[in-house]
Length: 418
Ligand SMILES: [Zn+2]
Ligand SMILES: [Zn+2]
Ligand SMILES: [Zn+2]
Image (cartoon, rainbow, N blue to C red; front, side, top):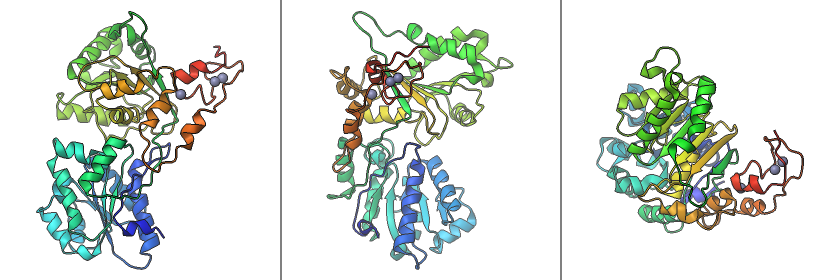
């Protein structure tokens, strides 16, 4: 039995190195159904989800597990819509817009209020920031809590103390039950490129290695995302790499859809955005490197990204860590490389975190930022006791330090010969 499901709870579920975040909802709900209501049916779990692609993915996973699930999207199948109206769906996903108080779907669900057994918020770390900003309906859905006598469940892969406090507040939950783990991604090597003295960050000098790699490997080049904060910087980096590549920028005929390099911002148009995403989802994607802003967002599931590069800082530590987390979702080895060039705007949180900590493990420094009340931090303590290897290692040394971050790899005693 899981008693905390019966009181209002807050549940920051996390993670598994292989990133099954879209499974978290289905797993929790499945546990709920099988353990708490083994013989009664149907019960309805209502999931508020801000991302269409995630909803569709989760509906599919629920269905694979034999759970009757649907999403309240405009294209909902007539049979599914009928089942929702008849109260016969087990898991119903809805966007904030479809579940905002007063919406027609919510009126339908109100008819089955006695069956609603769980109200879940997916990507709950966005509730406040998106709700305050461009999706006010998201924030208004917190009022649904008073319509149903169901526990509240919040799900997120990454949350820091500040977001935790504000999320508790907007959900009106004082004493949440937390289930959480540090959002570590051990398969991602964390590299910071520091500059010393008068050296400056310079796109042409610092990113030439990407040009060389793309030229040499073309379609074999590991899938790479290059994040930067502003559209103008995206254009600068994109144009630089494209110019340097020359003919090598194309496979086959020289048309834009045959480029191995592309860009993604809020301004490139829907069609171009969709093309980039659909292309990169394929294992044999023509696009091997994508220069992008945060507009290349959550909910885009590309399992085999091997490198995430940051030119400058994201607007928060949480944002930065989430962007890094787009790498290595298949569990394979991946790299995150950060050029901590100040690009202006709100990047002080990240710089503040690492300032004065240049001589510490990057992973530990960042993960400490995500410690929440009651969270098990033994893995952080264990980081202090890792033993450097003093072997005649190769460049591909697999010891814990060499696989961790640029700082740890440096202090490791191995020789790393070619
Ligand atoms: Zn480290
Ligand atoms: Zn080592
Ligand atoms: Zn070694």
